[in-house]
Length: 139
View 1 (cartoon, rainbow, N blue to C red):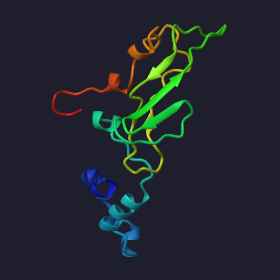
View 2 (cartoon, rainbow, N blue to C red):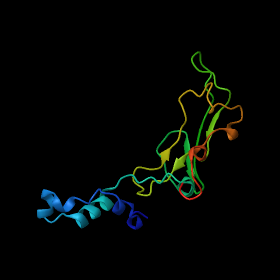
View 3 (cartoon, rainbow, N blue to C red):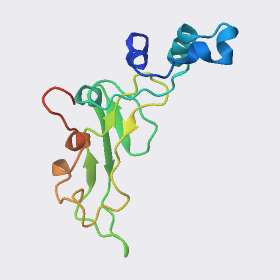
C-alpha cells in the first residue's frame, strides 16, 4: 500500500530538493520521494475505510482482529473519578498504512466522568466513527 501512496507528490515536501546542497550529491526530487517512501514509519489515513480491516496495536486493553481494533477497560470508581459504566470504544483505531508504528488509537479520556464518553451502556458510547466529518465528497 505504501508504494502505491502518492499523496506526498502533491505537497511541497520535495519540491525544493533540486536546490538543496544534497542535489549536487545526486539526491534531488526523485531521491527525496524515494527516501520518503523508504523512511516512512507511520502513515495514518483518518477515513472510515481505515478503521476496519486487519490492524495491529501495542496498547494495553486493545484487541485487534480482521474487523479492526476495540479498546476496553473497566469503569473507574475512585474518590477522584466515578464513571457510569465500563469503557468500550469500537472502532477505536485507524490503520497504519506503513505498518511500522501500528494503528493510531482513540482511547478516550483517563476519567470520562461527566463527559459524553460516560454512558451506562458501553456499546452506546463514542467511537472513532463519532469524530469523522464529511461533506459528501471529502471525508
